[in-house]
Amino acid sequence: MTTDAPTVPLTAPFPVTAPVAPAPAPEWLRTLRTRTLPARWRITAWIILSTVITMLAVGLIGRSLFLSGVETAANTEIEQEAAEFVRFIDTGIDAGTDQPFASVEKLLEDFVGRQSVHENEVLVGVVDGEVLTVADGVAPEEKHPLDMTPGRKVPAEMLAPTVRAGASENSPAGPLRWGRVDFTLGERSGALLIVQLTGADRAAVEEGVAAFAGIAFAGILLSSGVAWLVAGQILAPVRAVHRVAQSISEHDLTTRVPVEGTDDIAAVATTFNQMLDRLERLHATQQQFVDDAGHELRTPITVVRGQLELLSDDPEERAETLRLVNDELSRMSRIVTDLLVLARAQQPDFVRIAGCDVATLTLDIEAKAQALGDRRWQLMEVAEGTVRLDPQRVTQAVLQLAANAVQVTNDGDRIRIGSRFEGAGVDRRLYLWVQDTGPGVAPDDAERIFERFVRGGARADTNGPAPRSGSGLGLAIVRAITDGHGGAAWVDSVFGEGATFGIDLPAPETDVTTEKGL
Image (tube, rainbow, N blue to C red; front, top):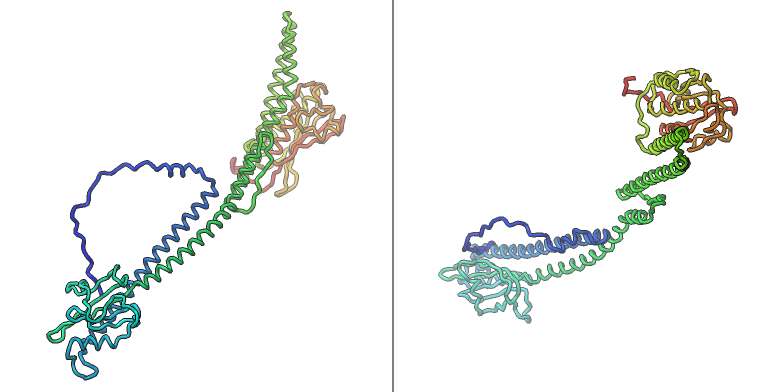
């Protein structure tokens, strides 16, 4: 059955206001945005908040649905009883006499007496506004919840001619829903009042909601503990990064963050370690540059200062002093230039790989080497093929070897240059070499001659027919260039019979150059 819903008249139109600028965020929200709480607390708080909101929404929605179900069930019961009563009236036969009912009272008493009602249902026969008969689930010794005893007046709101059904929240029996079926027999009229008491069912729903609230509270406490532990596990690598960052000092960059797993946090730790690797290499390069510069520049600076302090007024002595000072300054410039090259060797772009024809590269190197000194330059062998390397750096390395050869030989001495491939396929390698007829390299010096500032034995600055002022960095630069290519620098010498210096670079045949169309 349906009820007439009351209507609320609109006494005034809704007000229309102009747009208002948004108010500034409250202080507590601005404080929250500053993230003053530790990340572990924030993660836990958000998990608890989301859990509370979810539980609250589930509880409220569930309560509403269950209460709606109680009301729907009550309406269904009322409609069912009303339909049975209408069918009973349509029959209109008294089962005791097999004759039509003689009175309204008899009809109501007969119908109500036959009904089997449950404890929350009340059927009331009404004649002339008074209770005629009642059927309910209340025991005789108990007080009727509605106080519907024969002869009592029925509440006026249940007999209003314009209302056939309704609900009450504040009746003596608590919440209820009711419906009324009016009928006429002869010249008299009567009514059947059907009442469904919903208080007990509603109370059951509220008890269920209360039980759910208790379980939800326990679940929130449990989820809070789990959230705290999980947040700690998630943030453990972050705390490790924090500890490592705090432990790093200006002179110690060796500490690393332990990496476990392959998730996003592990990726952060890996990236942080890679950053520390780069910083450590950069710091080492910088420190080495400073140490080398301080070590090597101290002597020429002392020489320059001493010469300037003894500067004479005599023009010839002054000219000689200025020549010596200029030589030392030139040597200082060369040292700084070489140190900068070695410092750049630690950078990723020190070697720029490109396609190169080895034969053309060898011929170019031989042509440039002839300008280094008046020697008998001989090109002994030329490799033919294409490789991927940095032609400028390779040229710089081989010319450095050629310049060293010039320093230990006399005018007209023979210096040989060559290139060749050895191996095949992916194992093929490129050798470029320079051979001189100088004094050679002592066996003890051969093992460390490519280190910085090593001027080994017979190849020292002041030895050989053409004394030189080397920085001791030339062969170190050669090794840095070969390291950048993944190769090696080498020397083959018999002391007193000359030496062969060379570089060995990987040159797999699978490398096909497209940059020059070779």
